Amino acid sequence: MKKRNRRYVIQLLTVLLTLVVTIPAFTEEKTPVRLTPQEISSAAVLKEREDALAAKEKAMAEKEKELSALNKEVDEKYTKLNALQEELKGQLGGAVKGKDQQFKNLIKIYSAMSPSKVAPLLDKMEDVEAVEILRAMKTEAVAKIIPKLSQDKAVRVSRLLGLP
Image (cartoon, rainbow, N blue to C red; front, side, top):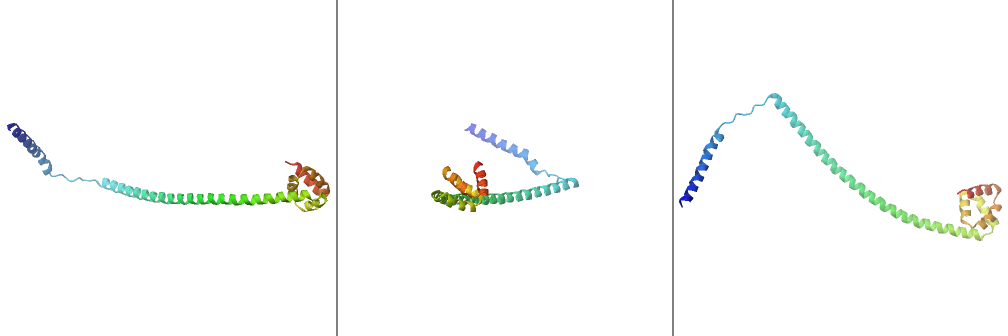
């Protein structure tokens, strides 16, 4: 028991000594800090800069939010545009197939007609259209039609047919 009391007394004395040493530090009066006018103006300028920086950071954060919203809107519009483009491709593909089938039918009709009946029709067409039709027809049929065309038209069409 004596050992226990000794420890207790030692601890109590340690605490008391610590208090005695630190109490004067708390009781001493501190002298107020004196600032020069230059230090005060520097602090004011620094505070203004900090405020300006905070305002700029806030404005920048708002701009980032706006930019993010605009970016999202652009992405949505881009997605819609791609969807519309794919839809148009599908519609155009169907139209092209239909037009292609009509063109094939026209070639079959012209191929079945006699050269003397096809030539006047081709004479009235634009050169490019006539060449497109003649290129789709068999060579033997074209060879019989060209002599039936007007001389000027036959020359122009022959030149276009010879070009790749």
